[in-house]
Length: 157
Image (cartoon, rainbow, N blue to C red; front, side):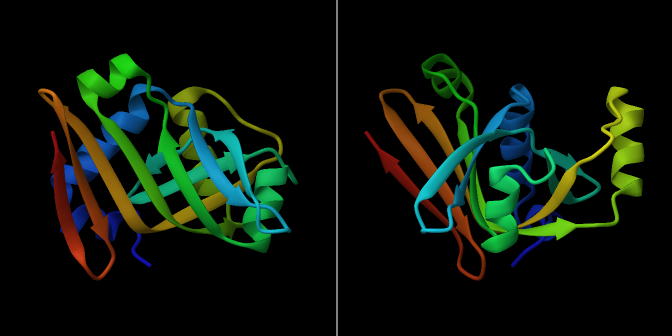
């Protein structure tokens, strides 16, 4: 697994693109796996901070329980037809780590947003796959990165 900082060092342009797509709308969608293996889609607000990818969740929420049981996830930025056409789309997959040392993260969150949650389940995400989609004229370009394999570009017209 690669940390977000390791991915950024290897693919700085792609990392900047992906971060910008997630920053365009704080709300994103995360896919987790239920106990029976079925997918669950939930809202989440990912946070890129100090070379790491984070997300806080309501304590003991279903998505938090899913990730503590099976850490695999897929994260998708919020996109509409207009935002996809104008700015592109981004996806991240990997594994989540439940984080118990929250003080530094919460202080930074409060300094940036003024929000200080009383309770939070905090996860740090490592990445195995990152995907960037852009519209190019009448076609689409899909740039994907996989840990250990590098990038691959597929253009479809």
